[in-house]
Image (cartoon, rainbow, N blue to C red):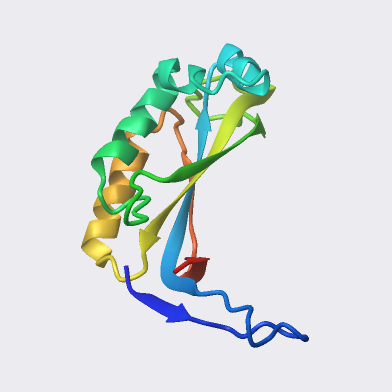
Length: 157
C-alpha cells in the first residue's frame, strides 16, 4: 500500500517537544453484510467472540479473508477486519428465492457487518476477483457488499 508519513507539530506551549508521526495510506473499504445463526450473535453479545469461527456461514467469509492477501493488509498484521453486530430487515417479494423467509413475509436476520480494506492501487481485475469470491460464497440470493471510493487510513508511522 502506498504510504505517506507526516509529522505534525502539536499546538500550544508544548509544540516544540510534542511530535506525533502518522502514516497515511490510500485504501478502499469493503463492507459485507453476512448472516449468522442467532446462537452465534447471542454468544458474541455475551462476549464469546470465538463462536464466530464455529459459525458455518461466517467460516466461509473467514476463509476468503485469510486466503486473499489483498484484503486487510496492515504490514505486520494481515487479514484485518472489523465486525459490527446487528440485524437486517427485509420483505420478500414475488420472484425471490430467499435463504430465509418466504414470499410476502417480513423478516429479521441476525447479521454481521464485516469491514476490511484493500489498497486503492489494487488493479480492477484483482479487485473484481476478490469481489466475485465474496459474492460467490455469500449465502444470500442478493448479497449486500459495499465498496467505497478511495479514502485515507491513518495509523502510527
